[in-house]
Length: 274
Image (cartoon, rainbow, N blue to C red; front, side, top):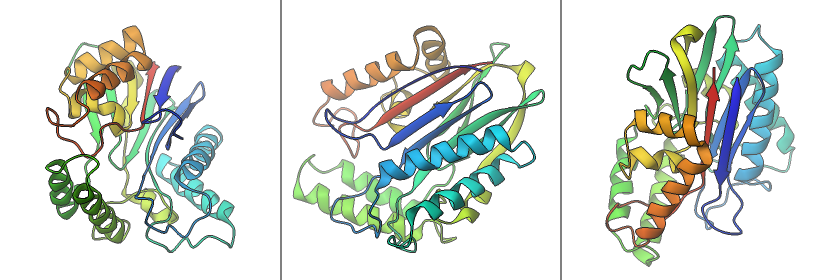
């Protein structure tokens, strides 16, 4: 793999809760699950800490445990990260730090991949065919309704803050319970619910991974197709994609042209040539 990556927090002076890392044969991308400051997580470390630790452990597993499937590697990394919390963190708290995960590694003549949560993996075909977008397949209808209600309110208003709190509580009560989406947190069994698979390397020109903040380029703002995204990543790099997303966010600061829950979000993108 020849890997390029770039990322930005959602605002100046903020700590990004996204994380990415890569080696010559593997890459990982994590999007930490942010939450309202008024919610108690039971953890003294925080989401950014969790995403970094899980990402490092997962990359190590992907590169040194070829005998384990990619989902088993994620389960191992979740367990190892949970052990780092120590006895002072309440990992049973539904608000415990968590993250969406994208991972890929070379495996013989194939690329093995995993996606858990609403981040995305995009396969760049060698023959010029349509890109294949993988991930964001665990819809939670109750949360989606609340999320769209948030978009109808004024950014920065008390009404929006109250709806965002209700949304965060609803999602966290349901996730990893069998009644909602699965996400990497403290329970290794969540890894078994990731979307995984293999694709032959000779079919691919490259592979991209994007957190939802970077995927706004296509998913929210419609600045181009997924083919356009891959062309931009391959020719200009992930930093340019994020810069274009930021420009649109700045031009629509009141979220009226493109309704969304946050004016801006942490954004990270990775592109690997194969």
